[in-house]
Structure formats: C-alpha cells, structure tokens
Image 1 (spheres, one colour):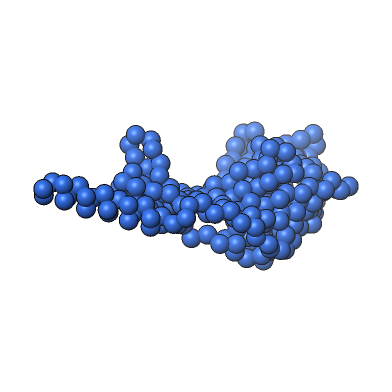
Image 2 (tube, rainbow, N blue to C red):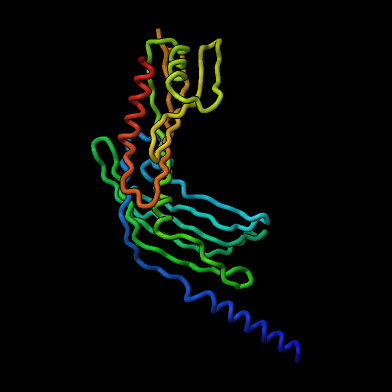
Length: 263
C-alpha cells in the first residue's frame, strides 16, 4: 500500500512538472528598426557568410560542474540574402552527450544591395520563437533572458577585416619608426635586424563604438620598403544601432596609414 502511494505521489509530481512547462513552443512576429551595415567589397572575410562581416554572438558559459548555463549562437543565411537567426539557450549537458535546453530565437531578414564601392546589408527583425524544454527528469528548464534589445546588441557587435599594402620610399626601419611614433603599440613586436624585417600591432584611435587594430609587417622593397597591413575593426554598438558605416571608417584608417608611411 505504501509503495502504491509513493508511486501515485511520484506520478502526480511528474504530471505537475509537465504542466508547469507551459503551452509549449511559441512563434510570433516582431517589429523593430532595421540595422544597416555598409561594407566595402574588399573585406578579407570570405569565410564569413554575411558578406565578410564576422558576427560574434556565439558565446557559452558553464557552471563549475560543467553544466551549460547559457549560450548563444547564430545561423547564417545560405545565400547573401535570406534569414539570419540568433539563438540563446539555457540548459545542461551530460556525459552521454545529451543536451537539454530551453531556447529563444530571433529571425531577421537579410537584404543585400550591391552598390559601386560597397554592399548595403539591411537586417530587419521579423519573428521570435520560444522553445521551452525539460531536463532528463522532465522538469522544466527556465527560459533564457533574451529580448529584442539583446538581438540589437548581438548584431551590432561584430568585426570586419581587410588587408592593405603600403609602399614607401623610406627604409623599413624608418617606416616602422614612423608607425611607432604616430600610433599606439599594443604589444611587443618582432624584429629581424639581419633581414631588416619587422612586425608589430597598433591601435588606431577611432572613438565612438568602433575599435581598430592594425597588424603591420615591414620589409625592404626595391629602393624603399613595403608594409603588409591587416586591419581588424570591431563595432560595439548598443541597442537599436541604426547604421554602421564600415566603408567610410576603413577608408579613413587606410588614408591615415598612408599619410604616416609617406610622412
């Protein structure tokens, strides 16, 4: 009798837990201001499906025992234009590889317009999906914290990368010294005096929500020198950033570097 009572109580607890999970997945439209990215066509990011823009919402935090607490990921459209999905989940994983999670996803339409010097990407949030889940004991997993402002935060936090080459009439030592004098060095560089080759990393002050790093390698070239440049710029926008103009920003960075090299 007592065993039957315990089984009955256990069944009731399970039924209550399942009922607490709610009505199940929800899918509904959302509306918000589009985010526009203006990107030059010479971005060095062919591995990034979004016209060379490296979106960075993917993150994962784990508790001390290895359980996944919360993570975010992004699904890119299969073509330049399509649907971009940003997903945040909360849950846990087991040694068997099983993952139990509750997720919130936002879909956005991606429209790409080819212009003379750039691509104009317009990201417009369109739908939200709530997918509540249960753990291995069928207990409900609380939903992650994600709302439309978080979607704006994710898509406005990204990087672009572009390569550039500068030729100078001055020796490689003088060219590097000019960079050292006009830019902020970020780390200890590499020097090979025998071959007169140098490499270093610099910060380019840009202000606002954009930060820019420049990696430069300096070599002798004919009667002067050459600098092989990699520009890595990151946007750190806030909620509902309307337009991020990478074309103008990167053009300005290149112009500043050219002036330093020929000074």
